[in-house]
Amino acid sequence: MQYIEICGNNRLDGSIAVQGAKNSALPILAGAVLTMGESVLSRCPDLSDVDACLRIIRCLGGSATRSGDVVTVSGRGIGECAVPQSLMREMRSSIIFLGSVAARCGRACMYLPGGCKIGARPIDLHLKALRELGYKITFDGSNICCERANAHGGTVKLAFPSVGATENVILASVLLSGRTTIINAAREPEICDLADYLNSAGAKISGAGSTVIEIEGVTKLHSAEHTVMPDRIAASTLMCAAASASGRICLKSINSAHVASVIDVFRQMGGKIAATVNEITVEFTDRPRAVNSIVTGVYPGFPTDSQAPVMAALCKAHGRSAITETIFENRLQHVHELRKFGADIKVCGNTATVTGVNVLNGANVNCTDLRGGAALIIAALGAQGKSRIYNIEHIDRGYENTERQLAQLGADIRRVNDEKGQQTKTQYKAHSA
Ligand code: UD1
Image 1: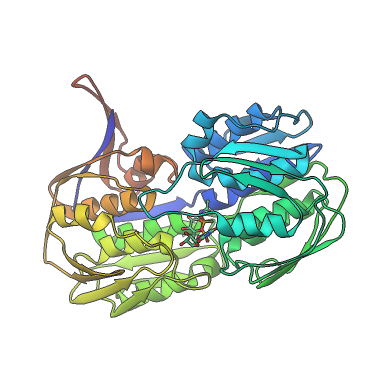
Image 2: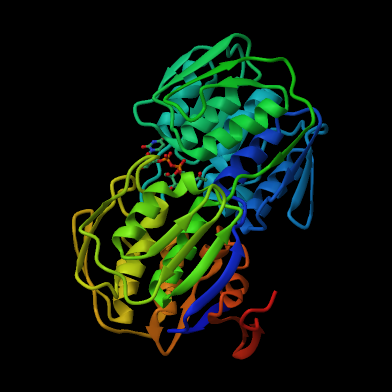
């Protein structure tokens, strides 16, 4: 068992290059299955979810290797259409492979895990959209089979701009004959990154980043090189760290436009923010100010993935903040754990009201989900004394070497391997490279 141990209240200071985006790397890796050539993906984050994708690709007959932050995928050998249940269980985003495997192999068979802690996570929009393109689908709630049969381009109107459904339709239609139009498409930057990668491999996708995306089918995709976009959620989490522990940090290799709504909230929190196109400096010299109202929304709204870390950063704010979650039905699970630090949070429906306290105290807490886990790290960084954060496999799904990054900024943080009561600490020296 591993846990993260943090001695809080150390001011943060320094610069850090933001990791590649998990939510971009996963659909791009699903896209690599469509190609007959080699995809060389730079800044591909080293995360357990990404690793699960690489293993899925190998199971399908492709090859996938990593050297540093460069992942090379060859789609040449792909022929297997079934992904083992054990592998699908490891990653909830596995649905993203449905469209690409069915398009490439003619058939995709996979097992899909059901709901998770943040809500039911239905896939009805994915299935309806693929059926509208002519894919034949059988689904018993767990096992799903999708056949390409006589699928062809068409118009798909999404009832909600689901990120995953938009990506699945793009992946499922790139190799179909004719033109596909997605109406009410998700506008998240990760959709643009997927389209850019596929276009560099020979696809013809236009309109990504707007509500209408057009895909002109091509017969084949070829080799491509692509650099994964910076992770806007990891960037906003680091900004939360500066707000919680105080300090001045500079985020490099970021696209500032992607975090505009988050920057707006940090300015309301009293943070000094200096942003250029690719760099953001955040400074908090004192406890943050409360923010009247934060409401999560689809891009360019405030990201649901930043909701939990920002809530944690507001636990010590001067005043009362209201945070409303509108995207997922059950994404306030971290509140229970944040209260263990002494946070004063009341929940009514999907709104959490956070009354800032003068001091948070170190606590032993459990990660409930990926972003909820990040929130616990943020709270611990601003808490007096020692905290232990358990169930950190959630954090490893989305944050690359989180303890090393935060130690580099001056946090007192370490990962502890607790094998049968014997502890081995992976200690990073503050400000080490
Ligand atoms: C993606 C991100 C996730 C982020 C979310 C919203 C990845 C790997 N994950 O998740 O980090 O929090 O976007 O920005 O990119 N819905 C349905 N039916 C469907 C599909 C979705 O009802 O078929 C609902 C979901 O339950 C949820 C909402 O739509 O309430 C948003 O989901 P969606 O945009 O699809 O998020 P994901 O693609 O799962």
